[in-house]
Length: 242
Image (cartoon, rainbow, N blue to C red; front, side):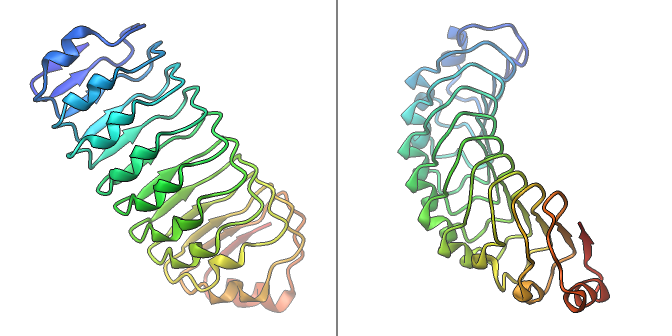
C-alpha cells in the first residue's frame, strides 16, 4: 500500500475493510482500493471532498454510498466494476463533470434514470450486467464518445440515443437485438459498431447513413446483407465482418 500525499493506493492490499487512515487524509485526490475483499464503503467517503478519481473495482461491494454523488471534484474516473452491485444510487446523477464511469461485471438490472444528468461522461462501461433497457434520457449524454454494453439482455435502444452525436465507439455484442436499433440512424461520428452475437437477420439500408463508419462487426448473427449495400460500405472503406 502507498499513502503519498494526494494519492491513497491500497491496490491488492488484502483488505476486508477500509483502513481508518483513509479518513485522516481529506486532502487526497486519488483513492485506489481495487482488488481487495471490501464488502462496504462508509458514507464518510463524502468527507474526502478533493477526490477526482476513485477505484473500487474487483471487490465484494453490494452497495455504493450515496455521498459519492456529493463529491464536487470527482471529475475523472469512477470505477465500480466487478462487484456485487444490484443497484446504483440516484445521487450519481449529480456527478455532471465525471468523465469515465465503469459499472460493468455487476448483477445490475437497471441504471438509474439520473444517469442522464451525467453530461460530462466521455466513456460509459456497463458490460456483463443484466440490463434489459437503458434510461430513456441517455441521449442527454452529449459528450459521450464510447459506450460499452457487451453481455446484457438489450433488445432496443431509447429513441434519445439519436442525440449521441459525439459517439465514436458502440459495443452491443452479446445482447438480444433482432434489428439494428434505428435510433443510431445518422449518427455523424460513429466509427465502430460491434453487433456480434445478437439475433440480426438483415442489415437495414439506412446503415449507409452513418458517414464515419469504419468497422461494422456482424459475426455470429447470420445476417443477410444485400450485395449492393455491402459494396457501398466496403467501397468507401468500411470493414464489414460477418
